[in-house]
Image 1 (cartoon, helix red, strand yellow):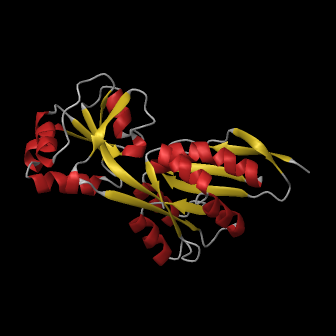
Image 2 (tube, rainbow, N blue to C red):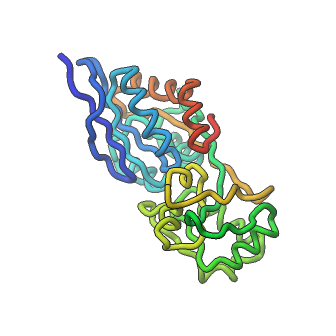
Image 3 (cartoon, rainbow, N blue to C red):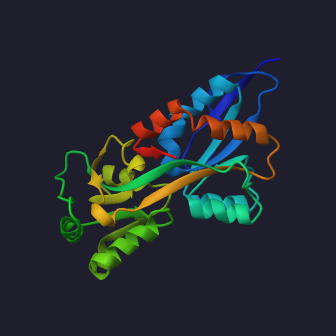
Length: 254
């Protein structure tokens, strides 16, 4: 007997949407994934469903928030989070070490509203001037990049000077979205979280050794009732086709 598959794609919440067609043997895979992978998974998920006839239900959010959700018993079959958060969940017995695989690496960048003047951020000194000149700077306070962004400001010796202009956003309001909406002049976030927003433009990556990278591995949950389907998803995300989508979305395949 055949059944209709559904695909849930929403930032921080699972919402079913009509997808492809599966068989009675098809599995429903609950995937919790970092926002940095959102645009990639929105494109790749239907391809995976079509190829395997499994059904994906995806919840996106900040890695730290998804980690807490898993710790508190949220249903999950596969998680794609930052290295630190995922490894903590492996140590806690929530995710399996066996089959763990790197999916993508993300690079940080700076966003401005589309059509607005773009400051020079090509060198550390130029980046410093741009931050000091900006009227407001946004980043997600609970995001994976937040500690690294604060470390950059400390390193440049401008943490106190920019403190009053910082807007620490919730995970539901990504930095590029805040820039596009005029909530902030500049936004600092993963490049993969800037490119999807039509109202925001990528000024460029953080320059030189100010740059920081975030790796996103995947693992199957220890309590999953469909571990083989979860492993199939991870394998699919490491295929050449998925790698091409990751690159197009501003990520480096794992």
